[in-house]
Length: 482
Image 1 (cartoon, one colour):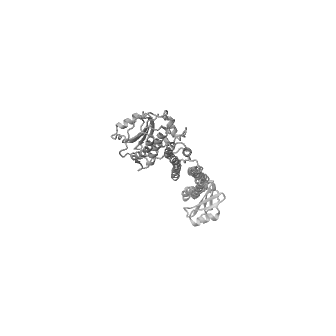
Image 2: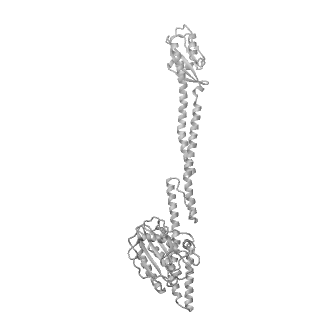
Image 3: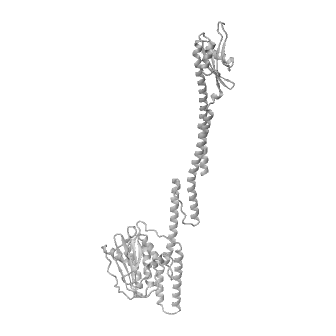
């Protein structure tokens, strides 16, 4: 494309230069010729008044000399018709006698070619009625004076125009070709699996729009792949909820070959699920915020999930309560995402606390945010920051580290966040801040103090507990998958 533009520009500019320079050069040559013969006519006209007065040779020689052209001017006076004298010739004659006679006969000026130039023959009427001829020599150098310089200037201007047009076309070609090459290179890199390949938005408008479309497509590809990985991890992690129930039920089967086989199968299944989760999370995904119109009733989801976990809590002798879920609470989070987050946190409670440990879920509705608190009466988490760090990376000590990551991504998709602190039950409290207006959550100094301030500024208070929860003695636990 670049060389094509250069060739087109070269051809067009060359044709324009030729179309204008050649006629202009011819005009300049004609102007120089006309200027030379005009000067000759003026010299001849300077002698004509003297001829009309006298034909004396000495006087005419002085007139010719005063005209400053004695070397290039000649005067041809014919002999008188009465035979009283001879013809008079002043100066050097270059024209032939036939040409001079023809001018006398025609009675008008004429030019003729001679050696080294041309002559102007100007007829002048004498007082005797005869016709004298003034001959002015015009050398070839006078005819072409300045023509060569003018043609050289025209040629230089034409060459400069051609070189300038080629340079401009080359720069335009580079401006068009380089973005196109970057677009091609970006497409090749993306095709080779380098998902970070992007194209700078530059060049003509068409290529800028193409670069924007390519970058948008690349971002969409990365987002789709990330969503697929995250979906695989989320679906695998959701399997841990029924696996927790299976593990607890298998523990109550007692002794025997069948019970041991069942427990071994459940453990193997848990290991396989953990492997799937870690494999799916090799590439760090990003969660897109819920689109316009998306969302769910958080109170309904809390009641539904607590209905599921309450059955298992009764089997283990755990006391539980739900607060603030007696009225609709609309949040900009998909129902499945909120349910997965609650299952992840409640599953951690059942998995990492001893049987009989109480837990609670509180839902607080505000003007610009909704807070979900999941608390338990266990021994708590000694290092909340490390637990959050595990949620952002690969887990250790048998933990996948995905539980809190699911919760965090769900909260951050709305501009909120997740905090870990101490609960009023004596154990761990995980606070999920869900922003309603999409703005980032404000910076808060303390976990518990922030919750109390939000509760005091809202008209909606937590609902009465569904089941009273005394603070039981915390049981020992080894770790948390928060």
